[in-house]
Every structure is written in C-alpha cells, then in structure tokens.
Image (tube, rainbow, N blue to C red; front, side, top):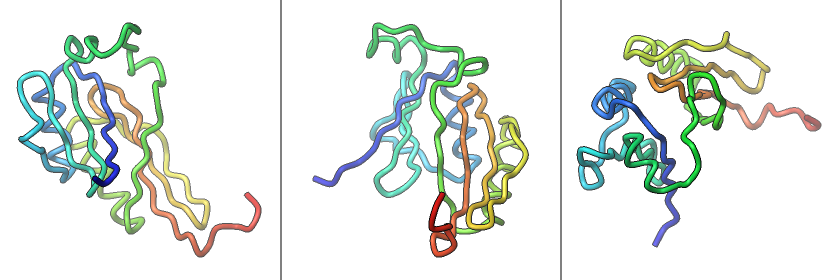
Length: 136
C-alpha cells in the first residue's frame, strides 16, 4: 500500500467548504464523503478531510481552535508556475476565501497566501529548485 496523506480540518459548514475547494479545481472523493465529512483530493496521494466540528471533536480531547484568530498550521501546496499560483488565489477569493498576504518573490520561489472560509492558512507557491541558493 502506498503512503497517503489525509489532512483533517474542522469546518463549520461542510457544504460551503466542499464548494470552496471544488471551485479551486479539486475534486471530491465520494467514497469518503457523507453529511459529517468530505474528502477533497489535492494530489495523487494527498487528501483533505473536511470534518464538521462536532464530528472532528470525536477524534480529539483538545479544544478546536478558532482558525480565524489562531494559527493551527501553515498548509502549503506547490504549483507548476507563478501564473497558476496567481490564478489559484484569484479562484480562492472568488469562492469565498481571503487574500491574506501580499505575494513574496524570492527569485527561486514565488508565494501567495489565502485563508479558506474557515480561516485555515494556505501557502500556494511555485519553486524553481535549480535556482535555490546554496545557503539559505
């Protein structure tokens, strides 16, 4: 069996969150989707499990953070070009997300940030690994 990653995120409105990620071009895996959770396919082995808060809470004894005011994680996705990075953030804002920080261009890496409707922090970037400085 291949190793796969499932990132679990608490969401307030499952339908709204699924629509948001579908608007970004990601599909839903209906095999792992019901009224409590939805599986969004990010890549061949990378998935996001969107769990309504009440269901999410059954997996942890910790309090669910308010991701609009507290940073729980920085979730990063690489894309094949700067243009696609810009397009993804435009789609995110159009779908109900927030353009969170101005773009950063390091020469070898270009990055933009958006927040999804639940406040989760997404770093979208393009990186030319052949241009990475020897010492960072």
